[in-house]
Length: 241
Ligand SMILES: C[S@@+](CC[C@H](N)C(=O)[O-])C[C@H]1O[C@@H](n2cnc3c(N)ncnc32)[C@H](O)[C@@H]1O
Image 1: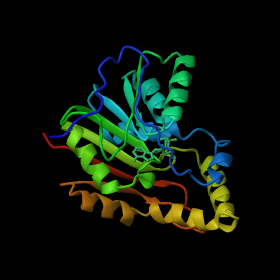
Image 2: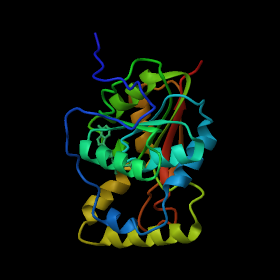
Image 3: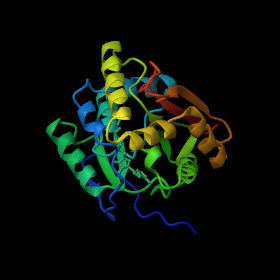
């Protein structure tokens, strides 16, 4: 029998549901310099909402880190969001940031992993996950878990990237940064970063997970010389009614 370590109940208050802290492998250092670019999160959220048209209800930001996607979702819709991440410190920072932004009554955090989601079957209306699946120990198992927790009619949107509406000038800067990184000291790490974001990789994980239907959007991080580098790759699926 499966046990669920924690189920979020009260969405009326910011709360951290504790568990074990696990340090995750970091993204390459170049990500830091990308923080100076315009925020990508509102654009990611616009895409997620446009492509998924989720019912209001139980929404999850999986691999939320400090919750930038969760906060952008709350700001765009007012619907509460549950952040899930193995990194307890990141969640705590996210909750503090949410409080400072006046979003304290819309965000909840749960320490957990994609591979063993702490939610019952068929309960979640929307799972959004940005920049996280590439770090999961077992992406196929994580996708099975996402499918398990979705309600009939529930939607999932997982991947990485800037969002299709991200301003062209910022995309240019992002591409320039990525190109530099692919030739810099951490070139090997960045090559792996690009490799993991190929659409074919996403299709492989989705098939491995046995998802009955899915769609892969975006071209991935491609290569340093491709003008589409940085625009991302996304997996969208739903549980049929
Ligand atoms: C690059 S950060 C992305 C954070 C945030 N979603 C964003 O878009 O800025 C990757 C996140 O995935 C989390 N993560 C790593 N392994 C995970 C797993 N197995 N299940 C869920 N989240 C995981 C990490 O702790 C980290 O917070």
